[in-house]
Image (cartoon, rainbow, N blue to C red):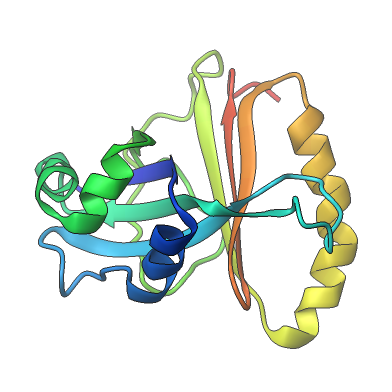
Length: 176
């Protein structure tokens, strides 16, 4: 059974730039199925504000063959040791809407009928360039709603230029 992980770490400008350009893929990391390396963003900030993209803060969403592969990566790999200096959570797949190339989405394994349990939501969008203006127009108001919702304990966004955007949020419960 595969496991997902989400990593956040604040590093130097040089290390963050190198990670975006030289981040390892599944061929270089045993047990890694796929990973998206991104820069963290401030949810709801104006699009062209310098505080929007947090260049020194890396966000990595990855799928692994098992938890041992995550542990090995964090202990033995150069980039894993960078990520080990930050925060991460391990996730079990629950459900999906849409698809994205690279990840191997498993069959749901968790009973979604536990409305009191906390849940993590991860979204990833790879946009075609003509879609970006519409996404900017509608995305920021939604970001503010998620950021300011009393049901979240953590919510943030991330980006990999030019066209990959992601959100990550931890919700207190699955209740609507």
